[in-house]
Image (cartoon, rainbow, N blue to C red; front, side, top):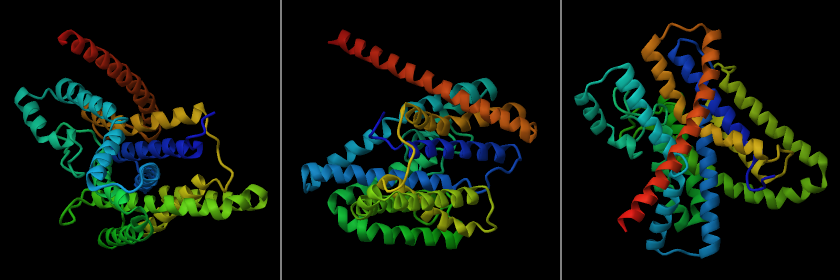
Length: 367
């Protein structure tokens, strides 16, 4: 058994990634599936913000108050460690894109590949602010989320190290609700990411609001633990009560994802319900799914599915067009894509190990 992870959260990671996959395939092949799947991305932002605050709090407890230079160095280390788990998949997806789509399927010329490579430098460095990865450039589709998340961490994590309680208890929740309100009012939904807001793309604003609010939820979770965990440990009724609340939160969010609400404006409520569900799940005040090797594995495959699925989707579009699949066959293709993404995950991992060993050997020879 694994005590450090949250089995329930790990399962939700995979479920939301699969929902996003089905939604994207539906959009490509003219089948409306999971109308409001974008709220899954808000969940990921909230979760990332929660874990970001948890890491910052641990660092501050170990080291105490940090000087400005220490804040900068610590922030860089945190961001690099955040990128390390997904960048091999990200880099392999770019290579896959070049070989399969640009060379084999579309027969791009060398001049076109070089031009697209130069245009895509912001994509490779995760600094494209969510939108310069057009389908004509070398890109990893649907991963604007990763770029926006990294940019938001660059802004928020140093602030946490500078004044953890001031930002998590006051500035972050107020700023987050301000951004959510702005996005909701200007676009009638918080899910628009490719629109230019005047100084950045909306995707970055979504990341800032989600991570900031998630960080505040970490502080709320610690308070809930102190106040209610002793009660729920003694009272099964109290624990059941919070479990029911958590289930209602999840059911309502899924109902929104499936399009059971007539207005997108409910996405603000869904955003808050996601946050509440995270608080209850991590606080330990409810019955939950225990962590295990299975839930660890489900969490592991969620990221490759998210990163690889759009490259496969675009390749299928390039070959067959947009009108080839009935709904039934599209579902079959989606399931096959999930297994293909898992296979690509293993290919990437083996290549990474091989390259590391080869690099070590080369360095030894040079010495």
